[in-house]
Amino acid sequence: MDQHRSHNPNSSHQNRQSAYKRERDDSGKNHCENKHSRPNHPQYQSGPTPGQNPLSSRGLSTRREQYEKDFPVYKQPVEVGCFSLDSERRFFNDNRQMRYYVEPDRSPNFDLRDGYKDRFIKRDDSVKEKLDHMLRWILANRSKLSSRGTAASSCALDVDFVTWRGHLTKLLTTPYETREGWLLAVTRFRGTLYISEVETEAARRDQENRTERHEEMMYWGYKFEQYTCADNVHSLPDPGGVVNTNEAFCTVVQTRLADHRLLFSGEVDCRDKDPNAPAPPACYVELKTSAEISTPKQRSNFHRFKLLKWWAQSFLPGVPRVVAGFRDHEGVVVTVDTFPISKISHLIKNEQNCWKPTVCMNFCCEFLSFVKHIATEDNPSVVYLLSWEPHRDVTFSIHRDSQYSFLPHWYVEEMTRSQDSH
Ligand code: A3P
Ligand code: MG
Image 1 (cartoon, rainbow, N blue to C red):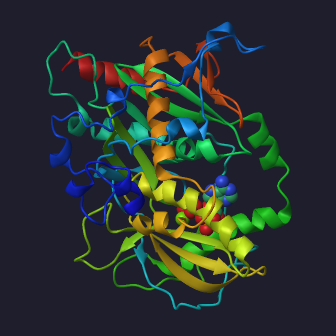
Image 2: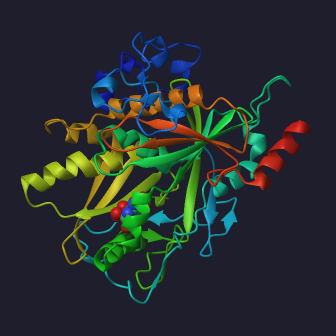
Image 3: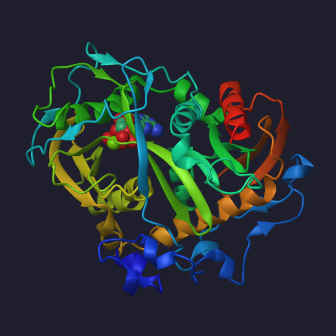
């Protein structure tokens, strides 16, 4: 990825196809792009924010200019496990919901509206699952994660952050987001920081006021997945089946952004069915739909807004390609194109004032440093609520035994028990 390499003094050590640091490159070295070796940080600003809890009087800037620095170290993400959610949203510590990519024609004329009325089971999104599925995965796999360190180690898991990939995607795109703010709840427990999203009032209102057309268009993306995915290596897609959005296959990856050790999970649409394909996550394929592009203005908007989201979502877990179905106004897929994630930065090069991967990654990195700095009390019932609205700084407030607490008792008790017996 040239955009990364040109910002990365260690680029000659990198795989030509990859913006990630190889493990051997960063063992024991303090790279100069690591934020801790930079002189001019952090971006926290002091001074009261009117009308806010005084505890939130220190903020973190989201201004793009502040993050135009060298690309930070981002280690090649490693899949440490996976899990599946079935048609009733039950958790399984295995890959039973994995699907296999079946390449469509370049002009397949898929009708994405088919089945919306009669073959669609929609997940109940009023049920807030928070981090629960990830926590279940952690409990089922804690031997892979527990520190082998000394009894003095206060970190039960060998990671600094546990979260969903989707929350990190929101952080990556924050410096370029002008419409939707976010709320992220953070709890420090046994040395690890857990980050879980809280729905904003604005998002709740938007959800309640969705038009019928919008509701239907949200189905189109899932329908495209059904046209292009098979349930096993030898079968074909079944466009006559039911689309059930409860079903999911999720990868769990471990990586490091500068000095932040991350463990996160994200839903994966499908994988390359070739048995000789590279190991996960390199064999995974992200599927997307988008309006067909017929004017320069549409192309520019696609580069500036869509590709930013697509890049951020797949770059984080190391998914190397997005297969996009471009649809007309009636929901018919007229063309299909593949976008290698490592080529997206070339595609946007000619756009004026376009987004930059380094700004996204540096902002995320500073955000995580900010969280480490403020979320100091190790207590499963304390939540540091980080709040952001477009054109503002990130601020925070602290809540004890509140509606925001999100680590379930079953998790806290099991982790406490397993550590005490350690
Ligand atoms: P598209 O990506 O083709 O829009 P994902 O791409 O992340 O795997 O999500 C699959 C589909 O879920 C999306 O397909 C879209 O249909 C729906 N979806 C996901 N997030 C959404 C959101 N925030 N708003 C509306 N639809 C969403
Ligand atoms: Mg998708």
